[in-house]
Amino acid sequence: MKYSIDTLAYNNNLKNVNPKLKVLFAILCLITSVISTSIVVPIVIFFVMSYLIIFKAKIPKKIYLYLITPAIGFGIFTLVFMSIWYGTNEIFSIPIFSFKISFHKYGLNLGLLVFSRMLGGVSSMLFLALTTPMPQLFYVLRDLKFPSVFIEMLMMIYRYIFVLLDEMIRIKFAQETRLGYKDLKTSYRSLGILAAQLFIRAFEKGEKAYLYMLSRCYDGKLRTLESIENPKLKDVLLIFIFEFILLILVFITKDIRIF
Figure 1 (cartoon, rainbow, N blue to C red):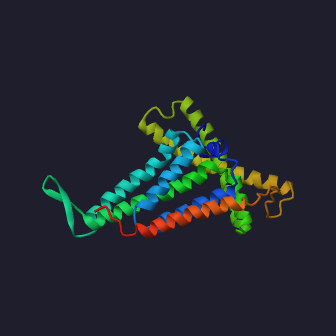
Figure 2: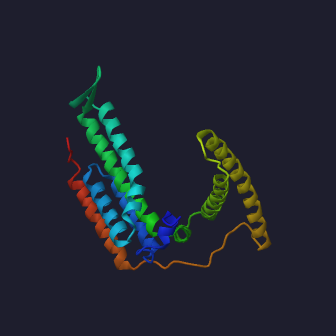
Figure 3: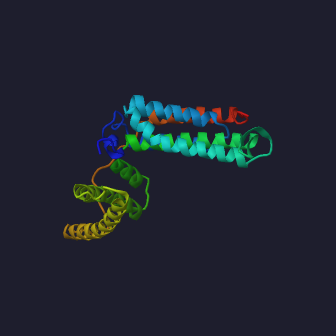
């Protein structure tokens, strides 16, 4: 729990930066990464976001690598799959027993593009998640005039993630003290009991929470008193200048291919 995403969002050097500014920056970088037709711009975005996360926000490198590794692994799998199945111009092949696995030019270029877009997009979202507490994101969504029902559902889901996580830790600890995970068979049985108990506890917690809210004059709307000021104009301009430079780079590098 020491290094959970929520804990890091409240304890980083960029937590006091205007959340509207961070949302704008992350979303624009994500869109730019997706529309790029070469690997250059998404890779640039990946390195910029990684620099901000590690050196500016001071998020531990091991935690960032732990979070980005699944995206890298999935991207490598996608790259290999696309290079084998897409295209006809063979670049090289690998013989395996009596089979020959061929890698094609079009598939490699397409796979590299998807891989780079994945890195750029995931790093943009990690920047937002690791530097911005969720309540601030809810306030931003409210200021953007998202439906109140949608925001309230997100708030309740966010709250009950931690309620269920706490219950899961308690139940699992109790099972472990009774050797509930001593072997594979017992582990499966304990896991089934854990899932069943969590379902029951979730229902009970939800009922209690609803009664608590009714006792405090809940009328179907969750009201918050905090508001977030708009970012400074110069900061917004800097972000748009940066994104404009990226768009120029997208146009310049649109025909660049590795193979």
